[in-house]
Length: 158
Image 1 (spheres, rainbow, N blue to C red):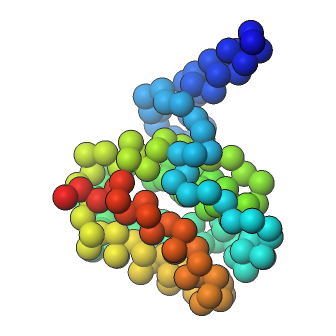
Image 2 (tube, rainbow, N blue to C red):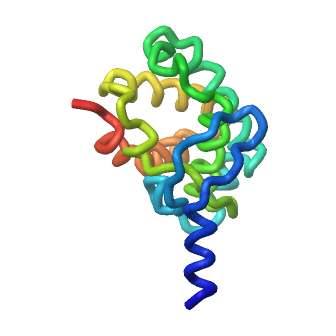
């Protein structure tokens, strides 16, 4: 019992942010915060070319959304180092590549950002382009996007 309490305390304890990241308020870390359960098996991970492919896709995505005039304004003042790391962890977890997701819930992470449906659509277009440039097959892209789609309900501000 004491061991469980200590583990939970460590999980919720604020950790020093990695180099280049800004600190955030404490929150409970859980893979459930990733917003979707992982795929079973390794088929999707192979379609994304493993962890290296995930890294390429996220780096490409973040680079492009920062200059996309449709959504770049939302990203001003955001911690892009943390965003890049959180997306890599989230994609790695969802693609069942053996990673844990240490970020906040989707609702908490996007609170007060004023995200609209058009912003999500622009993000998805950029993600599709990044997956295409990494040569992820169309079917695998669609399966991944279908896994991410329910997160729109918790991130879009009406």
